[in-house]
Image (cartoon, rainbow, N blue to C red; front, top):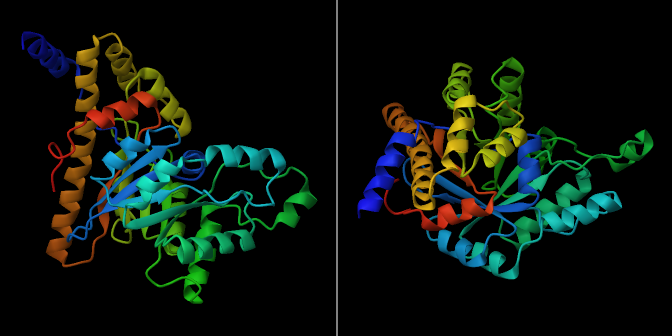
Length: 355
């Protein structure tokens, strides 16, 4: 007991008020979703809360199934055979990245709602169309997460032109919206897109977000806001441009466990590291294991509570205005490291964050 009390005192003293919360746009989501699956959840409460968790290739199937008790919507990666219009090296890499075990897929299939990821790069319009139709007809997909992807296009101009790629997430959204308008996709099928609060604070970033929402994006999933105040600043800009009431926003939450992991996230999100946060995670690695575990769980709890506060605030605003569910509606957890999975396995999901 004394040991645990000391650990808790150490945790209390060491844990800073980081509210760096979590993931997805352009290159980033493409890179991560191409090699991973995500479980997301959406309860049909007034706020339509969305809770999501990304499932990387190596995460144990038993953990996927266990976490599935707390999430009820599955976001799965692009698991179909790589399109023939990819270069051979890209085709091989895509297959390796998108592979999930049968047990993992079985666990994902227990979730009632399915969101499938479609990357744009190196996909021709016919291939994208076929993928969407196949997923809705055979796999009961009722939403698509449309991302740019990270596959390199052929450098040769003629080869590039012959592929007729949709190239960007915005191009995917426009094609998907056209398919729905024509009746090829059911009216209930949702389109999801991504945004990066770390790098899209300026006018051009806001313009891209407005374009995505205008092209049919109903849910925006963010990359991890890795700076101390990047998320509030970004949301302020979104609200100032009148976009916060035009879509549902799901805030990414990275499960951080080390300085190396934090720096890796900064690289993926194409942003500079915050010195205070970087030092904090470097110091965390020096603690004994029990204290370190408590600190990891506390950081996740703080991040989830931050998003929950934003969600409750948005929900209260919607109730006052008697509008449909818009604004911040949930979180997207992204455990891309093995130690992150262990944090999720220990975390008391039924306790710290409640509806």
